[in-house]
Length: 555
Image (cartoon, rainbow, N blue to C red; front, side, top):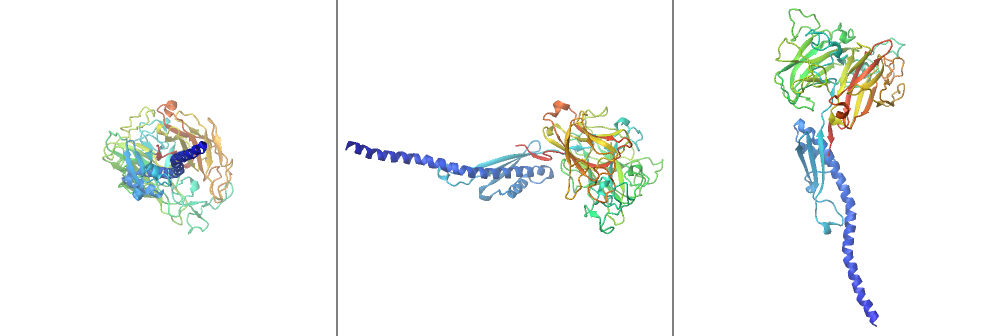
């Protein structure tokens, strides 16, 4: 009797314990279920924050509102500012950075609302602008071939020793030169040669429009792209006005820079644009100077009584001439000479125009003297501080013609600063190898580094000799083939070189601490080794990128 009463009393106690334990059990279960929902929503918010930070950074330079750019990018990723209380805030930080915070004040939940109430779900990302690498040179001249060692102020580079010759000219091809002639930007057609690969055939050019020959393969029907050079003014510039000068700008048939003559005429235009903001191309910025040339124009011999840089309607051949003056340079500005060729005509077939660019310091006058300088503290005895030297550099792609003036051809490729530590550098070389046995990539200390390589292949391309990818060990070199007769990408090529009309990509892992390895040295070089029976005389286009450029996430 007493035992039964005890059981009845304990039954109510157990029910109470179960009821009490059920509440936290349900709460934990509810939170566990909603946790997966929060993780999914958090991942979406993080993706939106990352995209918003990357999109907002260019707004620092372009003048666009960073908040507007951030919110547009987030919306494209499914997170819309102002909808259901969502907030997307962009804050400008120091060092070219933008921080973006995405807040969802009503994070989705299924069961946990009675237990936790409302709370904010937040994600954050920070984007940073990384200045594109400088191509070609840290100096106040670029693409001057063999002018070093010539003290003539109008036809040389006073103060630059012959040992410092760059070994290449800047160059632009006519739009109807086939792309295999080495200009990746201006060529509008591919495979436009009648003859088969050498040694057979007569190497006769077809043209570059369907009007000339319906079998022509058009690469860029809308016309040629524009070459860009950068004139970089240091952020702490203490210098005065300067002039941008061009050497041998005219396209003259007798010019040795233009390979002894042009087979067909085309127009060349040089334009200097104002650069309001460093890091962003000027596009439609104000034109500070312009010079237009047709083949054979401004090619006369200038009178010795008129020895100046204001060439005007006189001769622009084989001499330095003022393109434009920058009377009040802005510290940190990037002025951009643009070089273009055209137009495309049914009769045009081939032509090239080589030139050089330098900076003449001082007031914009017709005469003066050139004083070399460099922003690289290790670059010769005439190196000056980064606050006084206006450097000339390649932007995006640099199109050049090597002179073949020595046993090997070696030239500055790109300046890679310590901000790229631990990243991967990619070097793109188009149409390389004529007259060369092999190429090496040299680090800032001059040592040949190892790299992986890959040939860019399009559908239907014939693979080159040796395959489409591989690895070169440190100290080694990539064979680019001295012999002709190599298989080409397709029919209608005039050359039989191994990498003719091909884009070769080299990839190098940069060290985590480049300063410890190379000190202040930052400039990489490429070296072509000559063939036994000829010198490197290549017409090529190259570019250099670094992982995370020009905008990257840092947090």
